[in-house]
Length: 164
Length: 164
Image (cartoon, rainbow over all chains, first blue to last red; front, side, top):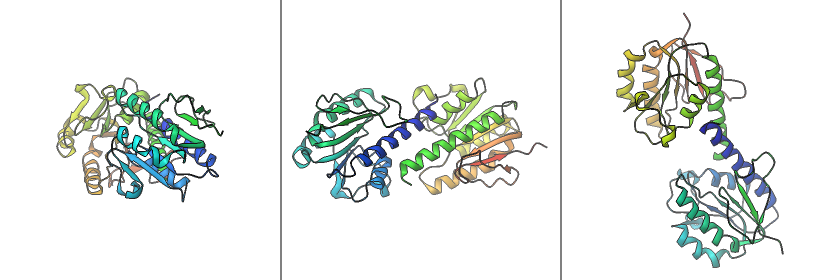
């Protein structure tokens, strides 16, 4: 499989997971969190699938094209190691869906990001809330869900806060 | 259509065109040119589809991961405005396929690149040689080919040097 094949599969998996999660939270209230804006592609997809839903974006530094940048009120700038702990009170047990696209070409940085997501995200999820991540997370309190149809296992990771 | 949808369509179109062209030149000798290495994704796809074929890459500055960088002997570094005119004698009427992925977020830079490709590439193509580009090109000497099945028109541009 070439890098081009692999990129197509990765984006298709991302879309299938986001579409599945957006449908799954249709009747679950609460904001959506996007960790890592990048070029703004998945943020744009989230807002297209969840019109009217508040989406807060965590990002170290904005590099997306201007039409894919959230309003300032919904942008939380800074290193995850600082912004995620600070978000604890604001979003505690409120979030319906968090999408963490925090992997990078640097394995050490990716492991660090996965560790931060695993530590700080679960308490933010409301019962039934979902967490999607490109990286496997050590989140013993969450249920791991199977991938939506057509998505290879271990290409994306899909977790859920138990309902009760 | 979200940016994510659009990115998936663009990469699928890219793959469909490259696969189609690789099959079309199977019995046509001559090197392949890749204009713009970028992250190395399409270079990797070209070499996977055309094993044994010489692929020369033109790039201003290499930013791909090391396993997607061609050997130094097949890498032509510099601005297209300098490297393409210099390539005229070396590749004259020899090239079987050129893939020009030279568009960027900057419309003026994209137009400039398209102009350089349109000016310098056609004389390099052997009879029956193919030119694939993400941008529309003014190449009156070449035939415009229809897109492979499943690819929307005007998402990619496909040209051929007449056979005689």
